[in-house]
Length: 135
Image (tube, rainbow, N blue to C red; front, side):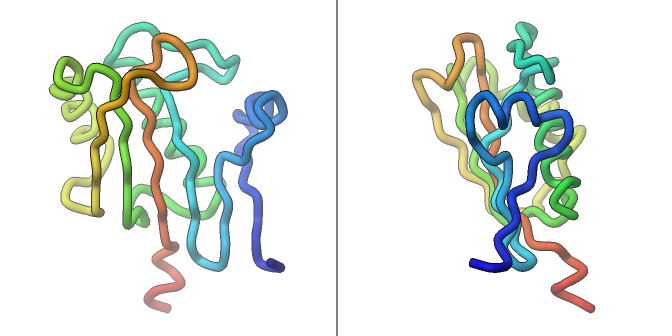
């Protein structure tokens, strides 16, 4: 596919090189973002749930921005939660503070674990650049 572009924000080059994955792939105006978690650029898991959730949203924002998008371009989102019932009130508080409400289709899925011990959420989404929708 000639218009396929791999998106790797500078702060994620270590992770991309180590894990061999693309944080996002852009095809035309559509950006497919891999799940983002609450970790530092050095790949350390953040222990405090609220700070971990803030970091996950910030990591997603960085991936979207590197692909020419923002939160307002998100059309579909899936979040994966460890111990969802326990952490959902704090996750919603953080989400409502940083991500526009009623913006996209959103599915929450409870899981038993994520890629590294201590991770509580993973956020993945699909975004479409608005500038290409309404020229």
